[in-house]
Length: 239
Image (cartoon, rainbow, N blue to C red; front, side):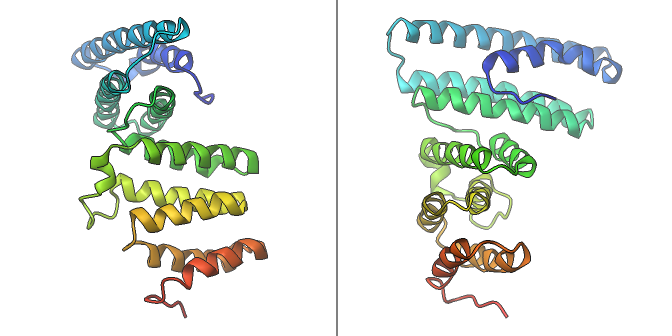
């Protein structure tokens, strides 16, 4: 699958989905999928209308952008659930990439992100494919914007015992991606916000980071910054 970077890419992908899934669908699933895709078409039409209004200098309220974004994410989660029921993990991963198109649109209108799980999964998938510094820097920048635009409810991070909660994974992925850029400003911003948002998790994260410094032979300037954050959290020591 080619990278999805625009709403048109997402729309085209969904238009072709029934054909791609034809062999897996019985009558009920086919009807359910078509119903869902009709709703997606309505969603894309609303978004196109909003973009046109914005192009004509008609302001879109952030709350309206959030409402539209939420609707798109609800549809996306239903589609992801359908892929799980069909046991098609590769299709689920493709569909999760659409969440990045949705968050970019939401951020462009200063909306609030209320649905994080598919976004975190999509970020992790992208990060695993990336080697080039420019691509990693661009992804770091997107993650930083996602953090900024997450709802207060997500930022409160109520489920602090849940290892796989999306807010936690977002910051862990951000820290890993930032470290891989070797860019000190990007790394420090990610680490500082990790300390602000997940202070209890920080010692473990920086301890793991120190192990990675050896295992992956990071350059000295990156090791130095990792050591400085690790040493702020003396409760954990690696042997």
